[in-house]
Image 1 (tube, rainbow, N blue to C red):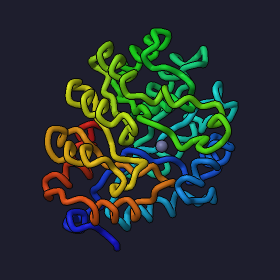
Image 2 (cartoon, rainbow, N blue to C red):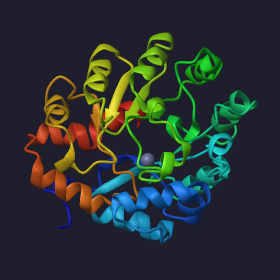
Image 3 (cartoon, protein in one colour):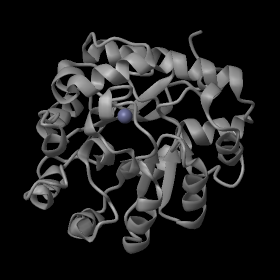
Length: 293
Ligand SMILES: [Zn+2]
């Protein structure tokens, strides 16, 4: 398979992956540590690395023209070093037409509000990624309200993790990670209190997909993506909503390098039956609107 038909019709690679991590040691080994080895086993991948030339070429081959590259800072909760925001900005600068850089701040660090400002004002990053399970925090806790108000004022979107996590999966105690922080109902509070904050809940939020659909329906500022799951495993109701009530709100994402573009797109082609109009919305139009491209 090279390109799915709706992408082959375009002159330029057009799809946008809203959820990509680094295929390098910075993410897979340093920030990921043992919990990432557990995740790789669940995904049936290993933790070998490759460079950004290869990554961009792979995406272009499959008709994908942009990817949101995510930072990572769960240092307080995991003890692992972050994928630094400077690093995300540097990679973005090396491939400015391809990568949209999202920073990460650790909400448990005292300087997180300052760091959020620096990410946007000095590094020119385009948004933020939170992984509440790895970062060990409840986004609805008032302790984090100042951080979200600051990001709301900065006028950039955020990605929250949604649902269970493969990080630490099958290890004793899940390596201490608590999946309750992945419940999207906690994000409903954030969305209600910060109506100008644009929020993307990453992944079908298993086992809380219905809560996630309800939030996306009720909150004008909440969206979701289909990353982290091959379409053949995604809940039928999620796919139904993606083609109907939420057709302007659901986006394509992989969770690179755990899921590669070819694998996701061939499962999409084989297991869904969306019209071309819906495919265009899902694969790039909704992301263009959300990211302001
Ligand atoms: Zn991810």
